[in-house]
Image (cartoon, rainbow, N blue to C red):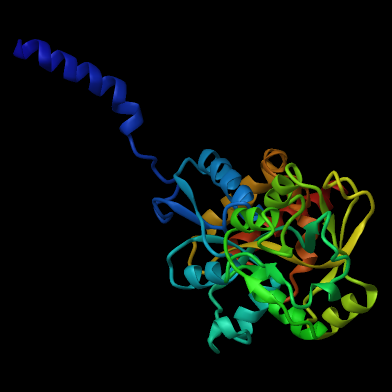
Length: 325
């Protein structure tokens, strides 16, 4: 009987052996696990980050986990504190952190983050239900607007937008899935979201209810860009959402993936290489990844690149020059 039990246990160990063997990092200086900090469910960061984690797990042969957060502000703080290795940020949040200018920084300059690769543009969407009387940003005065998590891009910028446009409104925070449900149920008057398009929470809402996109006027766009120089013109092409049948003009911020400055150079290089080698797979995860291309490096004009990322771009552009690409 005892011999039989031992035989069974040995058989189980043989079966489980490969599964129980931990991944061995390609370089002894690499951490045993990578954590990517993203944002709340219903958002583009969450979808993009979950897909990126799967891609990097395979490409790097190491565990890569996505961690849900409130967004760029919290991501920057977590990377600075060493609680995560990778994260997603907007250039606007990075500029505020670098100079310690926004209220959330409390005057501290966060200068441990280093750029890895460009992700996609974040256009600011303003959305209402189709049967709402609101058809302008000014008409949102006195209403209740869902702006996402407190530390997200929308949660940070929409109060600044309203101040610049001299509009008073109540703001509601929460996950985008929750806020989209609240708009559908009439608990909110609008959503103001700084997100990659198509945005999962808005797309999900549109599948259930008829919605309308409220476009900022030319004068409002000018006022916003005058007040916040990091904003750039941004357009959502028609058809990105079924109900959007013409270009939606707004303002936006470009998103970048960043890492802590102490991430090993060889790992930073491997991450960037894996992202561009698997860009098609990333695009299948979310269409916004179509903008994850080296040409969009131009959207970062101040944040230092990680040395490993710099080496990748130097090698890539040098080889393209030699080939005449």
